[in-house]
Image 1 (cartoon, helix red, strand yellow):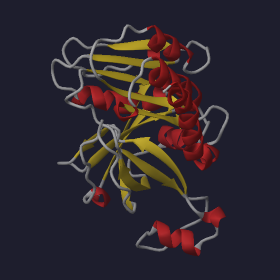
Image 2 (spheres, helix red, strand yellow):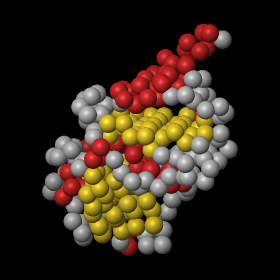
Image 3 (spheres, one colour):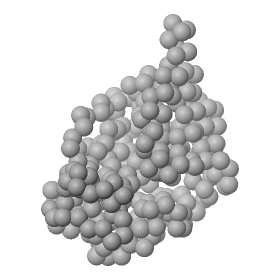
Image 4 (cartoon, helix red, strand yellow):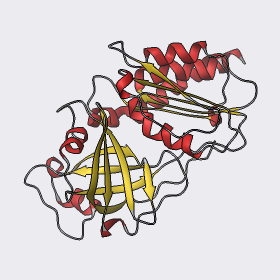
Length: 284
């Protein structure tokens, strides 16, 4: 598993919408470009992400834009809201960034923006960040996620070398929400349809029942925090997957706004990890 890099000060960019596309009933693709992305670059992870900034209505900021200056000089109510999204594709030659958005009508902030986005619209970006890439030395790979993790899972599958042994499980609402993804020879995505059931229920059942191949696994498990917690326990305690071979986190939390979840996410993850490590320590 690739080690998490040291945190760097966020760099801001201004991007312009150059293309939009409805991929599925609940997924919209937005391609961003323009001169403002000329200095943007990625470092080889498949879960690279950026933060999209949404200023409150009627609020503008001094140029050149500096998020630290905004936070120092403006009241908190006038700070831009931010939403974190995976970079689905980065075209370095064209300086174009593709981001796929889960859209559920007018719910949320970034989804509705993506659904209404038109060519020429602009948006500010902070980033990038990232920590995961499929480990070449792993014997096999496990990729598990709901719609929020689909862009990272798709990017990971496309980066897998030929001959890789991969179990990829993705939960979506219904068959129309499936996507075509390039995969290594012999690898297919196992699509699980929620069909109104609780999010992650099908993923937990499928991974729990999965016949794990022999050898060392490199696992990527991301999505709604509730089911991620269940699979974290299963993988760490029942499957004995070492922590260093597991990239796992709740991208979002059912019943909480993005701001509320981010405010407690680190503490929640630390507490869950401590709770799930304790039985192992006591057993030792």
